[in-house]
Image (cartoon, rainbow, N blue to C red):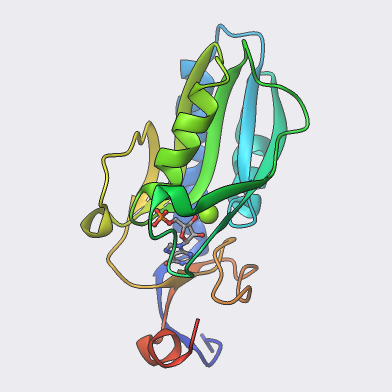
Length: 186
Ligand code: IMP
Ligand code: MG
C-alpha cells in the first residue's frame, strides 16, 4: 500500500480497529444493559471518529455530547493545570451515566483533568473509554475503564488523531516518521 509521505508504518490497520471497537461496544452495552440512558462525552477533536463508530455499535439507549479542550504545549498537556475546557457539553450531566470517550492517553494529565472535572458535576456514574494508551509515557495514574489498544511511545496519527491537525481521516492508526515531529517547531 502506498502510504502518505510523512507516515512511517501502520500500527493498527482498519480491520483491527473496527474489530476492537465492536468488542468495546459489546462490553459497554452489556455493562450498561440496565441503565435508562448512557451519555457518551466525546473529546474533540481527536475522538470524533472513534466516538462515531463506537456509538453506532452500541445496542443500548445512548446520547452523544462533546467537549473541547485546549492544552498549552503541543505534545499533549505538560501538566493538568495546563488543560482548559474551551467547549462544554450541551446538556448538564448531573445524575447521568457518563462515559468519557478519548482518543489517546499519553502522560495522562488530560484524562486526569477530565475525570476530576466530570466527577465534580455529580454524575450517577463516570467511566472512561480510551482508544489508545501509551503506558510507558504515563506520568499520573489514570482511570482506564475501557481501553482499545496499548501502543508504543511514538507519535501516531489517523482515525481521529492528528499531527498539526492533519491525517485525522486516515482509516488506520500509523506512526509518523520521527523526523517530521522532531524537526518541526510545534
Ligand atoms: P496527555 O494529557 O499527555 O495524556 O495527552 C493527551 C492528548 O495529547 C491527547 O488527547 C492528544 O490530543 C495528544 N496526543 C498525545 N499523544 C498523541 C499522539 O501520538 N498522536 C496524536 N495526539 C497525541
Ligand atoms: Mg485528545
